[in-house]
Length: 183
Image (cartoon, rainbow, N blue to C red):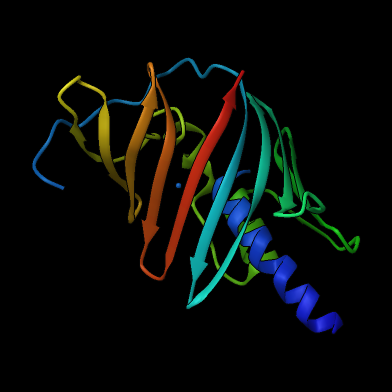
């Protein structure tokens, strides 16, 4: 049974890391140069290689520091990801710790494959991360879809200028994010 719970924790950690710790011919949006700190809480659902998991995430992001707490659907802690300066640390509910100097390396250590976490902080704020991207805008001029680093991010719903429902897809991975609160 330990193997099954570790596997379930790994799936939820995968989803959180994808959270955390992200068309048609369209305008190429430039990333904003002055990143603003944010906090958000969200529910997520992820599917990877035919398996599915869901849970909650509380994410606090600022330049140079980041903290992501991942919980199960029952509210139990599953994983904690912390960035301080140049180091990322992922701690699982059973106390295992993984360290890396980049988020993608951390996800590769903990999950077995790399996820583009560096872009996610921009993507949840409806803007491209640094690097090439393609975008499609909605009728109100907001980002409707973004393609970057092999990911397709669909912005399904906004509350004012902030996205509250997103779908992120990469071959073999789909993540749905419902942001409940922005700070």
